[in-house]
Amino acid sequence: MDMNATTHRRRTRVAFRPACRLFLAIPLGVLVTLGCGEPDSTNYDESRVPDYSLPAILQTADGTAVERPDQWLGRRAEILALFEEHVYGKAPDAPAEMRFEVLEEDGYAVGGLARRKQVLVEFAGESTGPGMEILLYTPQAADGPVPVFAGLNFGGNHTVRADPEIRLTKAWLRDGEGVVRNRATEEARGRSASRWPVETILSRGYGLATVYCGDLDPDFDDGFENGVHPLAPPRLPGDWGAIAAWAWGLSRTLDYLEADPHADGGRVAVMGHSRLGKTALWAGARDDRFAMVISNNSGCGGAALSRRRFGETVERINARFPHWFARNFHAYSDREEILPVDQHMLLALVAPRPLYVASAQDDRWADPRGEFLSAMHAGEVYELLGERDLGATEMPPANQPLTGTVGYHLRTGKHDVTAYDWDRYLDFADMHLRTADAP
Ligand code: GCU
Figure 1: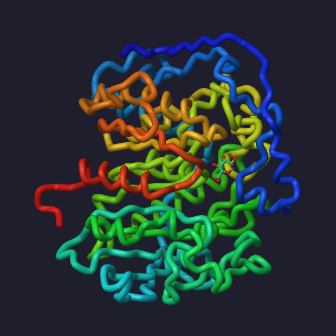
Figure 2 (figure 1 turned 90 degrees about the horizontal axis):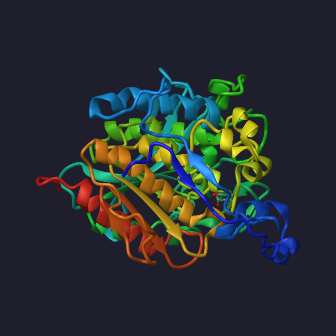
């Protein structure tokens, strides 16, 4: 497929969608968590998607066409630097002083199916500095290191399973169910269990590592005074925002997994939902030690093409979440056409590693079609590197996954992570992370 400059044209027609008025009675903090905030002017009409021209992935800054696999690494570095400077911001290297303290070594968990481990990571090598806690499950029955899914969670490790042995996070949480005065309570245990099918993951031979995103950066706009930002305070407009801090934490999680005897650090799939799906993509793009990358309903600033301006837009995301991206990204609010990159290039940075993008039919805010197109366009780098692209140029019907080295599905239903999504990720991991001698 020739896509050096991919141009899309649409007719212009005006349409309006109903506002989110139903939610007005809900307190603001909950609204932010729920992700409401879709203004009346949100475009949900394909015919109103503006004409746009995507920046070429396979052409270097000086105009040279990238035609051979050996030219890709140079172009990859250029694209990565553009995302760092203009979108997510530059994060520091791994801290030299980092220390792991195993708080629980061999917990008997999930009815004997799992070995549960809890590990404190101190980034500055001291208990008073910033840190994070990893909850790691590996199958008790495995006789060697297993491939692991690694992902951040929204509400604390204790929300992943109703298990009294999981440490309640002491970090800041947004008030809501099971959270009182920004602190976790026992009631919150297992609150997100439907998003983390631990039994299924384990019984299919995989491990699961998860960390609370708020350990790395509490999700509110505080001028970057908490979490890990004080390790390298953002001063320049191209310095790290919250997503970059969360992604940095995923790389530190991988640092730990590389050292753990039960996990195979060479077979870690980074996975995330929504804002944490944007994060998983940026983590997987920056850190090529991640063997597989999965984006679940990541939308704007994640898998969806910014230039389509369908659902959430750059202007909207910057206004509501000013701390997520580098300050430079604000210059592109309502000016997507001058962005030096678009999100298909972020996905391409994962190549040739397996990449899976998942959308949900009712999740129009995240622009399912924009997510599909982005994955499709990223395919040209997979092809160049001898891997399989999506193998389709039309969006597949709901619940009919496409699986090349790039995978995609459109699930029925709403913005969420469901058993259906996980079954597909496990199938995809079986295809790509299993080796003949794997446990
Ligand atoms: C909001 C936000 C999205 C984000 C989502 C989430 O809806 O606008 O960009 O993906 O929250 O993280 O739940």
